[in-house]
Structures are given as structure tokens and as C-alpha cells.
Image (cartoon, rainbow, N blue to C red):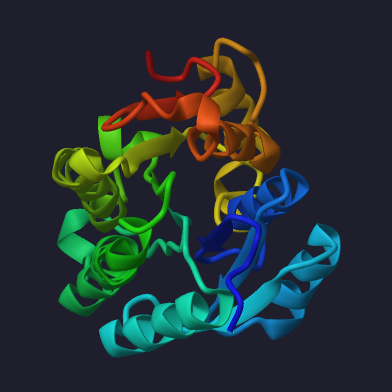
Length: 245
């Protein structure tokens, strides 16, 4: 099969929210974007329609064998893979003493181990690219912690350590690996935390005085996968309105 003339990007968890905004932004920049989703095909199709072109790939990042097969198929069909954006994530909130081991494991399996699966499967193809890029989506919670989110915070902090390690491992082949840590962003996942009095209290903590938009995060990712960021690797880029400095 003839290799794609466009740079090929895989964005995990791209059916909605931040992942959707990233997929749309990269498509506008001329990348051939593959939208990963786990279950909501209708939402993924909506992302695809907003992009104008691209393709869908359904797999669960927590399933290592499924990740291997899907990424191999993408690279074979497209003839290349240049960019991996690890955005897929879940949260099961609860204070430590109320957190079930199964919930703890489920969050780590998706948020941290899922990103590991994708990085490992994609690396062999990214190393062949002239401008290989990995961007991991962590969180401000992974940097400063948050009561009631022990599993989520641990998984997102782990992504930061993984980012820095992979940046050192892959740098000699020109592959950059960076991490973006969003603050409070308007998405389905954060909806319960940014309503009513809760929202007012949050906004007061943010120097820029507003909750972020998915597009704010997408712009940071857009830069990190571009040629303009070819000398940026192993970095944690904070997109949080000044919530954490």
C-alpha cells in the first residue's frame, strides 16, 4: 500500500472533550488523524465529521493485545505513523479509605498502563518518522494532588515520569516526548466539579478567571507535534490558567 503523503497521527480517547479538540486541530493542520474510541461510535463519528477527513479505530487502550493489533493495522494501512497523542483517560473518584482496589486498578489500567501500551506499540513506527512525536495528557491533579482523587492523581503523576524517561530513550532518533497538564477544562469528565458554587470557588483560584476550554489544551498539543517544537522534549506544559505555577 502506498504510504500516506500526510503525517499520520493517532489520538486516543478522541470521541469527545479534549481528545476531540486535539483531533480537529491536528486535522486542520493537515495531518491524517486516526480517532480512537472505546465504545461511543456515534460521538467518534461526530469528531470525524468535524475534522472533515480522517479515520476511526476502535480499541481499549487497557487491552495490550488490542492496542498492538490496532496500531499495527494503522501503520500498515497508512504506511506510516508519526504522532501519538495519549489522551484516553477515566476517573473514579473517592477518598482513600473508600477507594476499592478494583477501581484503583481500573483507573491505572486506562490512564497509565494504557499509555504505556500505546507508546510501546507505536515506538517502532515513530522511530522511522522524520519527526516522531508523543504527547501524553496528564493533569494539574498529577502535579499538585486533589483530595478524593488518589487513583487519578497517581496515574497522571505516573505519566509525567514516563514522559521524561521516554524522552531520554527516544531522543537519539529524533522522537520528542512531552506532557501537557490541563487544569480545569469544560468537559463531560469535569462537569460535576464545575457547577454552581463549586464553579465560582474554582474560578476564584484561577488567575485568568475562567475555566479552560478543550481548544486551549489542543493548541498546546498542536505546537508540540509541529516542526516548531523539534527542540522541545521531556517537558511538562501547563495549561491551567495560572492555577498552578
